[in-house]
Image: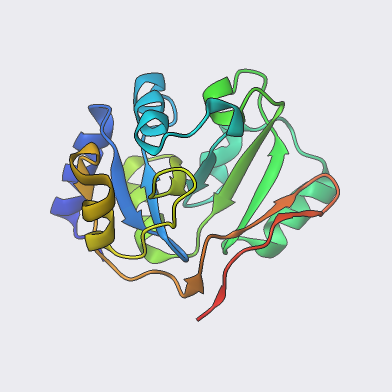
Length: 190
């Protein structure tokens, strides 16, 4: 679990436009400040990922996501509340000003409120959501340890937080909040 000194350092890295890697629910996440387009571009370039695919935001609570989302219906809000905090990523209507680098040019955004303590602590310390994408080159297996992140992504990552994964084998499930459809089946519990 990251301590206060470590969290302050990570926040300085993020504020400077840096990229971090951190243990998430099933794989290591690669993250940055979602409000910093240069950092998001750098993350996409490091992964070799198209901006048209969009990215996920991870948060400590629903309030951190509110500025990024369009007003949600009661039905959608109930779906989110029933699965959060937890290892389910939802694609929801995005706020009108949500950056295309995050939405992939669509009117929706993928978001998750994590129950995994390292993710929650990072987002709490940062004071908002972070970009959360698997720590890997696009199309390659995601890293499942800090050592794998360092070996696979090298100096492209400014800070790697070591710690345990959250018990899933693979990335989280992604669901469409409008119709509850599974868009990506996630990892199962170890």
